[in-house]
Length: 318
Ligand code: CP
Image 1 (cartoon, rainbow, N blue to C red):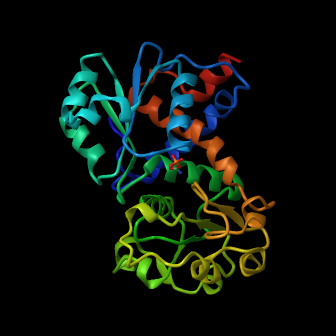
Image 2 (image 1 turned 180 degrees about the vertical axis):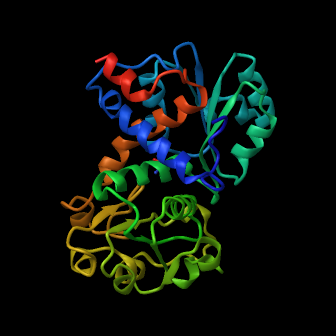
């Protein structure tokens, strides 16, 4: 793996390899065993042009668990604030011998742009670009689903909310279909549902929440992406919660052992009730923890020493 930019075009075998590798890193990620030297001597720069709590910090922790040196560029105090271009920022950090850039940007395609222009030895990992893609989020979600459900081949997975503006939903749909989930359902108001999504992703479309989550094994709630909407699309919070907010009562339509997920940050009382977010079927904080192991897998597959399997390395340093 050179870069990790999108789920699109990746094979089922590669996605499973990432999940398996992440499984081997769980002990290291949770500090049950010591960190591994797979990225010792490598420099990883976090470039977050958009805000982040979970993704930036779990990338940093993952890099540290792999023994890499980590640079966290503070964009608001960097020369970007003086008008330096992205390409000049890239060139200057490359001059400091950075091996990998983890990039989040409001413009779709930024990570691809950097991958096209980066020096050949440099890897780019997409940490979210505009509405386009958030591939490591999708992989940590797949990892969480596999840990709870075991197998993808007979699952019904419902994704609920602002599909229109969600890079997470796009990456999740691609990953679920690639991993063989037969029934992927998309539930959203008409104003937040992209056109022709059934054909593009092989999913089923619903506009009614209860109907859409009926007998679902997994329900993934999405954040309303206010920062990417024009005001005409903005639903009122009260109306949105009334029609699409997940409550304990609504969740009874899904399977009794349903797993409830959300990539975060949650808007409580808009996308879901606190009772559900903090309830026994919620794995939202587990998703966050799993992000460390999955990001370790992706980073080590891009720039790590690849001569030993992650699991045996994790065990040998216990
Ligand atoms: N899920 C996610 O991307 O969260 P952050 O914006 O906090 O990184």
